[in-house]
Image 1 (cartoon, rainbow, N blue to C red):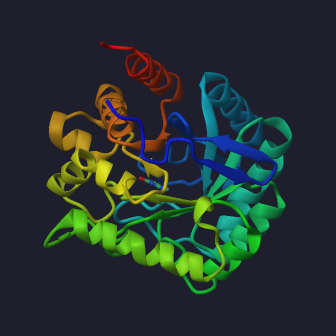
Image 2 (cartoon, helix red, strand yellow):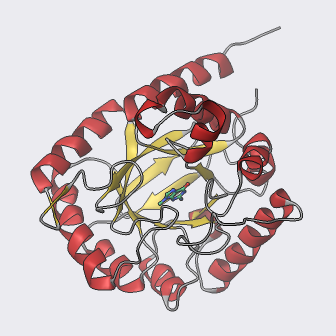
Length: 291
Ligand code: 9MG
């Protein structure tokens, strides 16, 4: 059982260095009315419930999350687009509160340059963009801010991406896309050591595409960048098991184990404590000395 190709890597996240020598956990906090899993959970009259969020954030960190991913745009298939102002209104108060109350790297899940700048001023330590910083001005903003970037692959746009995803060879095409976006980042001045890549499970992919990517995640890890994997509660679990959203924990944990085993360095999950147990077990097996 091999650890990730990027084992030994670290990310410089504002004031904190994240050690990726073993896989780490990113807990999900969606400040949206319509995300597929926790949509509406943290909003009261369109505003984030900061007390409840702080309690949840602290609980996630206590349970083993090193990063919290905070987003104000739902990117579930068919999601309604959000304005820049709505995104700012949803996430900024959360960054301000959590940077005071919580000891974790705060990640911004956004594609919008103005939101990236504002969140960085309010304490963001990592930028996670499902559009791989391809929106006008996003790459310039990200390079200027000097934070680590997560580049995710998506085929199409959230409102239509699951209608008819098509690839000749999903692995080669995802890898090719990520190589192009890495080059664009490096040309814009982002150090290679600050780049994370992500195949974007569920973003313009059928069940077979997702399974192929998971089975050969080692190929992406072989590109030499830490790999992030977001599989938690996603619909591929429903396709394999028939489970509704609230009953996908076993499926999520099985996928988390496979992703970490195949080279993922960062697991983006809803169920932090349970995933931390999975990683403890994986590390114990990895550390066994066999003759
Ligand atoms: C925001 N978001 C939802 N799913 C995701 C995934 O799989 N990866 C990344 N990087 N972000 C995601």
